[in-house]
Image 1 (tube, rainbow, N blue to C red):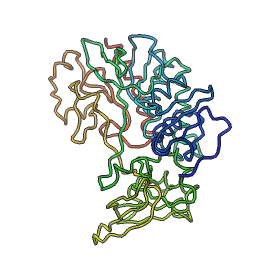
Image 2 (cartoon, one colour):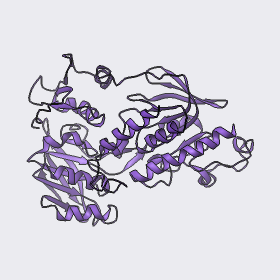
Image 3 (cartoon, rainbow, N blue to C red):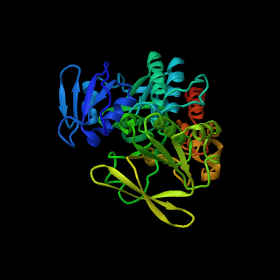
Image 4 (cartoon, rainbow, N blue to C red):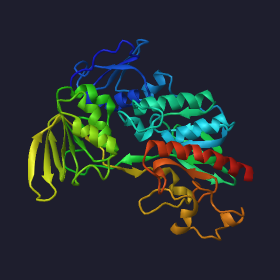
Length: 408
């Protein structure tokens, strides 16, 4: 993979090839300017040199974030609202909650933006007719939330969350305890895995999940493949088309119209270096220290053929990230999505459940089977998997949380 052009505003210089992928991805999504030089430094070892002169070899993401001042501690032990997940839904709730006077803590295991933060360009979001990148949208929302007083912690997970009385208690992955009166789960989804030979071995060495916008300079003049037929795949294809020699979208179905927005399908049809191969799946990926070849299978005939490839980006839908809620007696559907509101009655919540009968009310819309715990965005059963819908649900959750707090 060729080196990116030097960035005069760089705060970090990164070397290390595939070993440095997660660092490049984190810096991109955290909106930290950096220069990537993959042909310098020891092979297979990530090295970060900061503008302060500090040099870290094989650093963890926490090491990098700490050196940049991105690791902070919560200012309080108790908040009105704790939000788990800093994607569009979580950030929207943080903006509206904090602007209306709630004390708000947002916790994210990576960087603000969620899966939408990997989108190279979102063109159907209200107010941005020319489109906006996912990490730019997240950066604006993060700044807005902080302006109103919300606190955002990155590279943290909830390792022990439970409810005691009327308070939600949690221990974070760094051992810090926090508490909140109400909780919003906005953890979104993880990319579904491509279960074929070679993927794990070549991960971050030509095989990526999501758009991996940080890798665009490295595909200049190369042949790139996108696996998937949804909007994320379409956005990735158009982004890499500005860099790559060719971009090929691989879909198992007979076309894109069933799963991709019309504006994206039109752009793909008009792009001279973007092709769509229907009824096609990846059977195997091969390479030495980097991806060199894909074996493709025709889903109708079963015939296989091999094609040269420099990079493949997998965008095949997601699985809900609900692991942190499983110990809280929270109802999920058959696919693991959090069930909310009146849908709970169709998924096993009894109308005489004592948690609700004692309150004399039914669950609010967006409220889970645990009173005071709400869900918004892609992690929620029945949600519309769009950025605008996630933002709308995050905003909608705040007045419902105000009602819950008033009930108490």
